[in-house]
Image 1 (cartoon, rainbow, N blue to C red):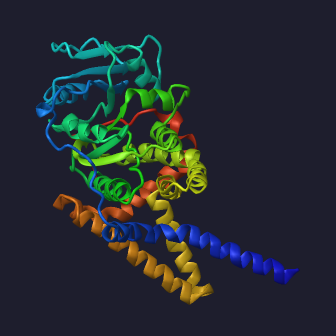
Image 2: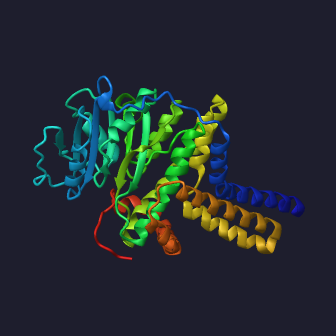
Image 3: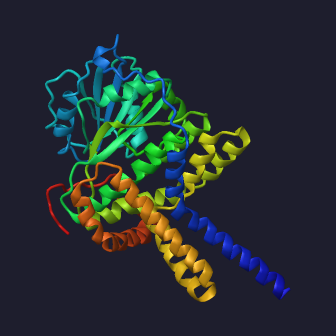
Length: 400
C-alpha cells in the first residue's frame, strides 16, 4: 500500500510540474511555430477607408466610472479620427457630468439614473441608446488615446470576414518604473497572445479596450448575461470562441493606454485581474474540450492559452519547484533551469521584435519589486472587486 501511494504521489508531483513548467516553454514554442509555418495572406484590402466606397458605421463606446477628468483628451483624440461615419457614446456611470460639454454633435453623453458598476451594463446602456443602427462598435477606456487611423485599420479585418478584432494597446505614459514594467508586460502579451497566436491560426486574446466587434456578435455573446466585477473580456472571448469565431489581431489599430504608476494603484488593479483569472480559468477546459470535439485548432490552442496563470504566479511556482528539485531530482532541476532560459529568451524576443522604448529595458531591473507588489495583489485577490470597479489614475505623479 505504501509503495502504491508513493507511486501515485510521484506521478502527481511530475504532473503538477508539467502543468506549471510548460508555460515557461510555450512562448518560444509558439514563436518557432510562427517562424516555421507558412504565412497565410489574409484577403485584406489595405486601402484606407477614406478611399473605399462607403464607410462602415461605428459606435465608439467610452465608459467612465466616478472619474471624468480623463475624458476631454480621450474625446479630442476620437474626434481627430480620419473617418467620418461614427458616433461617440460616453457612458458616465456614477459621474458628475455638469462639466462635460462637447460642441461636436458626434459626441453623446449618457448619464444612467442608477449606478451600473459594470462594464457590460454600461456597454448595453449605450447600445440601447444608439442614435442609429450601427454596424460595428469599438470599446475605448476613459484613459485611452487613439491613432487617427484607428478605425481605418480595423476595417480591413471586418471586410475580410472577421467579426471581432483586437487592436494593439501601447503605453501612454512611461513615467515610473512600474509603468515601464507594466508596458513591458503589454508588449509581451500583445506579441504572443496577439500577433503570434493569430498568425498560427488561433485567436488573439481580448485586452479590455481597443477591441471592436460587429454589433450583432456583441449582442449575441453578452446580451443574455449580467457580468459584474472585472473580466467581462474573459467572458466575451469565451463566448466568441465557443461559437466558432476567430478574433483577429492588428498591430496597426493603436490605442494608447495609461499604465499603472503607483504601487497602491498596481496592487488594487492586479488584485482584480488575479481574481478574474481564478474566477474564469475554468473556461480554458471548456474551450479545449470544444477544440478536441470539433477538431478545431483555433479553440484547442486558445484554451491552452487561457489555462496559463498570471505571469508572476507561474514564475514564482517554477522557481520553488526548481529549488525543490535541487534536493529531490537534480536532473529535473536542470530541466527547470532550461525552461527558465527558454522563457527569458522568449520574453526578450517579444521586446526585441516589437517597437520597445529604451526606458522599458532600463526598468527591467525593477522586476523583483514589481513581483513583490503582485504577491500583495494575490493576497487581496479574494475581495478585489469590493475595493473598486475601476482603476484610479494618477498620471503625472511620479512615485517609485
